[in-house]
Image (cartoon, one colour):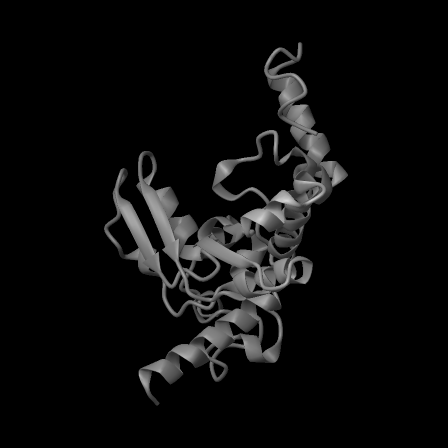
Length: 227
């Protein structure tokens, strides 16, 4: 099998795992030694039960690693770690703990179901629109930059509504794939409507409780931090 074919097969299998949140017979690796839904490393106790209990359940379900490199890597506080083929980010999480404070972990992966589906969603709104996609899937989202022809943009009746519609369709895909609506930029004023849309009442209530505990007199950015 040629390198291009190997890359295609691996990408398809890992993308299927992402699309199904780790479920399905065709989405797991090492089928002869690990049952469906279990990554090789998790199933064969390469991570401790304490490690697995300390990370999100979805990260464990999506794990397709065949080793635990963080366990033997000589990582130290303040270092920069690059995880090539980070997948769901299990080792990214463990490495980040080892290099704190002051360190940084960069996860790199090539499965792109989110980019493909978000592109389809944008083109359903404006067919054929040129897009520049700046991907950093390690934090659960991407930058989708639409390039309208000047005249087409000028003639839009409501440019703000168009921007909000495109933002929502991309965020819907990210949310369905268990990503985020804000990525590395935080929420800010622009993201408040998205927070209100995607966060549950329980999550919003918890955030308000924390805000009230730290700022009982509502002096810090009143009305700006939470919807």
